[in-house]
Image (cartoon, rainbow, N blue to C red):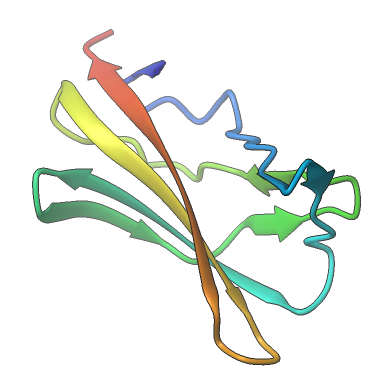
Length: 100
């Protein structure tokens, strides 16, 4: 899992999803959403500053205040939606937010 300090803006999150052993080209034809959840409660929803790359990466740039959430363990989800057919692909990881 990942560990970040409350209110951090760096590091950016850069998951590299692999599909059938191949890197996906995320640079065009996708929209993105990031959720940070505690159990079934969404504590952060982000749809801006998320950029897909042709090299298989998706870069999530945190903005001031994005990670200003109560310290604890959460689920971090990146949801990519293919614009041609609205199919979704969800990448998930554990995240721990700690006090500074």
